[in-house]
Image (cartoon, rainbow, N blue to C red):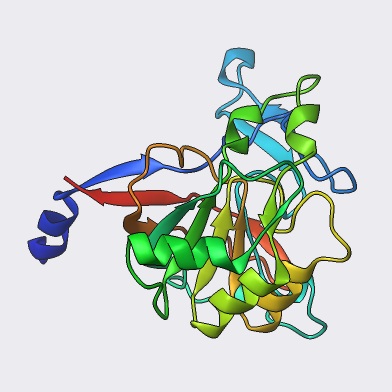
Length: 232
């Protein structure tokens, strides 16, 4: 085995950006909830331990495929395994007013203070709403008032050729919006949308992002295990 890749990985610290899939977690109000039923149990004398899980494609930390909004768009099984493995940047929008849509100028200001966003970057937006994530019956605060991206901000990023965009809230569009402008922009340009990330607060402004979706044939989305790789 070539040890150079392993040696390289050892120079990075890994941060898990994924919520646990569990019953009573927040989901989009019209989407199926997550359920887990015990099928076999070692404690009951079965030969093994296993569960059956039932969930919607958009449960927990997940990625939207273009087909989620685009007729005849790519489904999740056509997403290349390493499509979500790239240089990433974090843009802090935690000061945005409730339900507001982030203007393009906020991104341009971030670039002036950091670096230009480049083709194939994965752009992650930190809103701070990850702190509202809670199980039922305390989940309602997570399901309202989050900020998102304006159409102009989405177009600005799409024109740069980014690979994906992510956020720590339910959707990249703001809670109060007409239609889904950011979804429409990104998914029509085959730019993937990652939602319900967590542990973004302490990430540096630049890192490596890695996640893989399940290969769900014909799927509109998939839960993912997302991580950040940060240089020691």
